[in-house]
Amino acid sequence: MNAMKKNTHSENWNGCFNYLLILSILAIPCFGFAQAGINTDGSAPDNSAMLDMKSTEMGFLPPRMTTAQSNAIASPAEGVVMYNTENKEVELFDGTIWTSNSGEFLCNTSQVADEDGNIYNTVRIGNQCWMKENLQTGIMVQGSTVQTDNNIIEKYCYNNQADSCTKYGGLYQWDEIMKYSTGESTQGICPEGWHLPSGTEYGILLANLPEALSHGDQMKETGYTHWQFSPLSNPTNLSEFTAVGAGYRYNSAPWFSQVRHYNILATSSPQDENNAFSLMLSYNSNGAANEAYPKYVGFSVRCVR
Image (cartoon, rainbow, N blue to C red):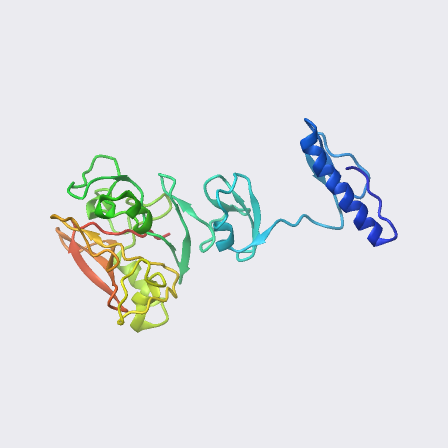
């Protein structure tokens, strides 16, 4: 479809345009090779282009959608493009995550991948950027196994069921989370550019939630799919942190306990040689508690940027 001169009657122009556009599209699968040009100057499409669009009066308008809508696209092809109406940027799917045309990381809309290819959404709370799901990187080991310093990230999945890691994230002993270092806010098992939150950083998160008496409810996923019902709690997820009741791994049989009841989120802050601080959310409380647990417990992990 090459030169198209405007008709003085807009209806004729629109009809001609639509007819020719349909013909050009239909022609492509009918022949081994075809090019299409959409323009008003009569020029042929460039030899390097299957579709060549030229105009000094109008622009190209890609599909417009929210972050949630783009994330809901099933198996997007590498190179798919859309305009994000929330961050006001054109985004491209690079085969793994959506990336912005500016190349900048944009919390709330940009995603992050771990070294295993698991994808995590992000949420801004105050001036912090958090992963919106529990980390699930690593190789699953049995709950009876002690995680070791072997250069392999090891994770527990609740009740030794792999799909539990998909639902709730992995569970990790503190030394494994830290990659056997001791520095607060270290990267640990988080993706590059992210780190393990300290107790202080979780305190900053809580300070940026508006309702002081219901910090836990504001952090919990809405509803009771991944939380046990209790009249003492009303999960609102006002913060969009989307915490789930992942339970934990203990150090004796039956190894796993309290799924849908608790989420024990590890910090990089040790209490002493044997214990480390965490942020604990409970199904029967609307608050969030700063608790110390033995380092051998299997904790959930959120990373912060």
